[in-house]
Length: 243
Ligand code: UGY
Ligand code: MN
Image (cartoon, rainbow, N blue to C red; front, side, top):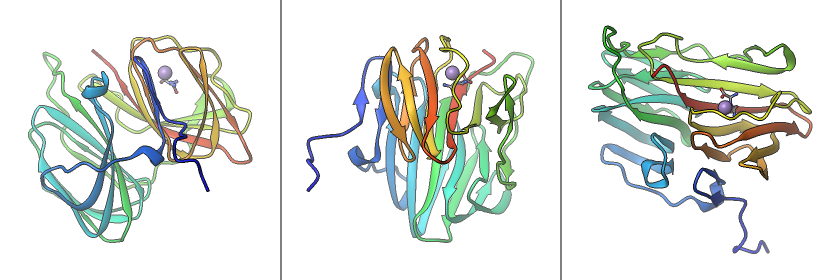
């Protein structure tokens, strides 16, 4: 039998690893027939939230954004999205950007559909208007070579425009691929592993991580990663940008 007092999850002042074994469900008004796990949040010291929501076949995610914009990404399954008047059926790898003051609705079309979301209070930029809602129903691919290393690929999911104050990217590492240097930066991250495994160094501590794990990195939390195992390691991550 597993010893239930053990976990790989840690929560420190400037980083956290959250493995699924520690999840406790939350209730979010309007998000019904689904399991909501708030993985990263202001309560932890972060300046954004990261949620993972698993919908039953009749599950619904419905609301209207206020101060915070939301980025939704379909991790698995199938759902019908209605955002800011646009409608589409979404499957794995599709994603949606919901700006502030915008109604949104997602209805599951398959049991266990899973949706990742990043929520951030929008910081407007004088002279620029907020980007309208977008439903991206083309699957995210492998991405472009990162910093000249073909073992690393980065796919940028949102338009690189100054009116966006958040970026969401997918990072793919072939086994043995690693960040070219220890990153030390002001931007904050939240991430979810979609595939594979590896070793993350956070604030000079070393953690084995794998598919299903999430990580929070506060500003200036030093970070480095290498992929191990037999398949590429892939994570989707949030970053605050342009402000
Ligand atoms: O965009 C980034 O800062 C990215 N290279 N960081 C990371 O994957 N930990
Ligand atoms: Mn980084």
